[in-house]
Image (cartoon, rainbow, N blue to C red; front, top):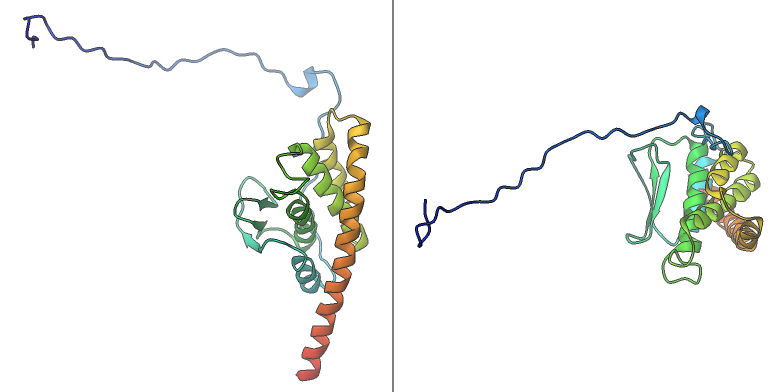
Length: 201
């Protein structure tokens, strides 16, 4: 095939060749430094008055709460754009309540447009605050989540100075106190509604 001047028409073909690159990797036993925190296994256990506790906590949420099949071992998440909290349908009752409180803290403290919004705090700061609130509220509810929460907080605290962690304490204390106060009111309402249903039965 030739062009208008009688020259052969050529076509440039770009080929991409797959190749392997040799890289060096190390086993963790061959490295120095602080040990890498290992996250605890998912929480297992029951929760007394689970349904009432769940509904009372759900009443504190600015976002709807739903359950779904989650991948990659996720226990739940707070979606700021869709404005919803999603919990894994595979969670035990204990994991469900602890995760719900964690995601509630995200929704209440970190949603966009707030002074403490996600654009102003790092992901690690938000995770430390949410899990710390979850620990305090879970303790108030009589739920043992210590090892799980401590491991989680440690994994997000790596490299942070003490002053940075102390700065979050006021936020954590205020939110945990507010959540506990509001939970107690919602729980009394739940128990009152149950008594009404029993009288009507």
